[in-house]
Image (cartoon, rainbow, N blue to C red; front, side, top):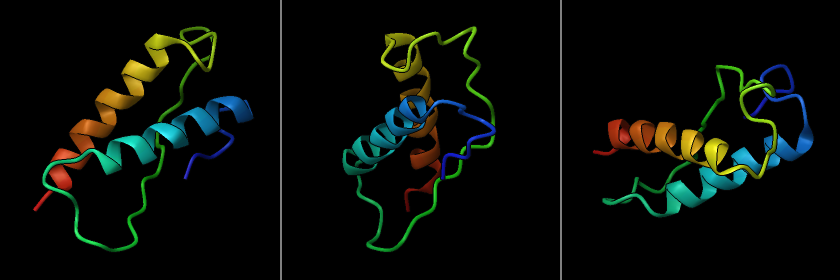
Length: 74
């Protein structure tokens, strides 16, 4: 879930969702087949990440997701 209060622009929310899908499919070992909820709990500031397609935003999101999925792996 990517709420509007943390990522104001739809393009940013969609970019974050695409990163979630990509990282979840590339986790080794794969997570068990189930419904997993990933919820954004901190703001991605537009001043720091001016563009939704910026490499800085992609690296930040991917890094956090990889840490999250590593902790969730069995």
